[in-house]
Length: 510
Image (cartoon, rainbow, N blue to C red; front, side, top):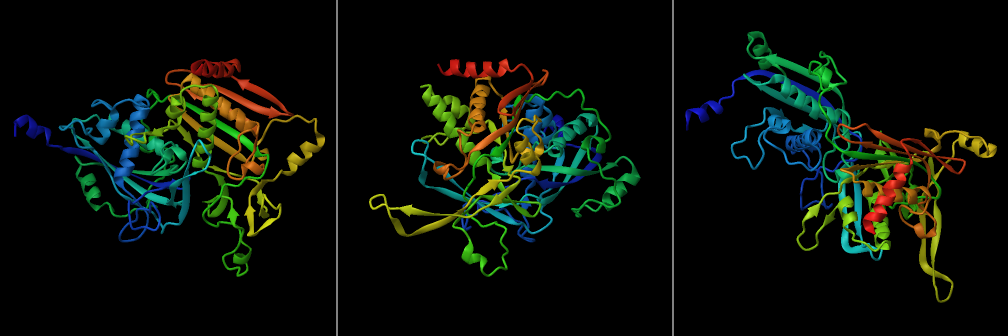
């Protein structure tokens, strides 16, 4: 081994910085184990000793590295040896002589035994609108609210720029703090949203005898936050108030946050019963409906939701219909929603991120239906079934407003049932135009969501939509569309730009 190589492999450590935090899941998360013997298609990864959910350090490192690279270089840019992501997380695979990562990331084990949700899905044939044969699957998900203690240890070597390492670490961990990093499977369909609200930091200067002894006595095996240490809400402040003002966010993103009211009942079928009925009620099993709306646990209570996968499927199908109507190539849709080549099995990820949305101010009502013999006009024997869709409830303020009729007021949080959140990465103007057409169809109730849409269910009524376009080194553009007394109102940027986006889309496909 050469002297230069020998010197390079020596890593004299000057400081050790330990960072701890509590990761909280905001939406259900799929951390799959790949166990083929599980009763579900994808079972949760668990710790073999405690049987708690396991979030591996490799998964955390991959998510942080990808976020740091996208923040610094933008989407779809290859990582370079001089990037902060390489400096903090080590060399890339294509670099055989790459340096080891100075950041140690521990596996995280959930604080409690996991509460598991079963979520099923199915592939829909775009031509027939029915399920593909053999394409149904189910997943085990960690419920929202599950907590994982995180622990990071940054090794600062001699003759290393400590400030640059801290900045890279602060940017990456700030992504967790702001809820911009998702974990696990199907991240672009609303799963795996998470955040860290509290941080603790310990810094040991190993060149000092006192700090060396303190590091040796440090409780490395304790996963919880210390009661004797100050808590920080900001990782930037926790790391000593380093400045990130000069750091430019290179991500090019369009956000659409749209608020809707339920104009008709909604039914997205669920494979499990999470209704309000008590498990101790012996008569409840006899009165359970055959079909209930999809629900997910939020703060320990089952809440009706619109899943990201359901909304993505609806938008994808309508986008294909729009492009086919114009008689043009579906590549525009595939570039937006992603695609798997049936022959080569090569996959392209979706650039459209669709969040899972909780539906507020609703009630349930069981409705009975029966199949009719089309020949005799009578009822089929033994095919009576019941369904339990959800219905939107108007608040007292809305009822007063509807009675007054002519009173004008801006939309508030109280007169909406659901807020849909979409994020398009690396948006092109014609793609924004296509999304505006999809938003229009949702807004007017022309695009239903969920099942039994043929009998009038799944219609929305638009209340307010906010479009925000964030581009690197450019002024943020924002448009707000609201509905008042049957009329659309526009605030923010020039509304003609929105019309131009649609025109560019039509010209692109013409």
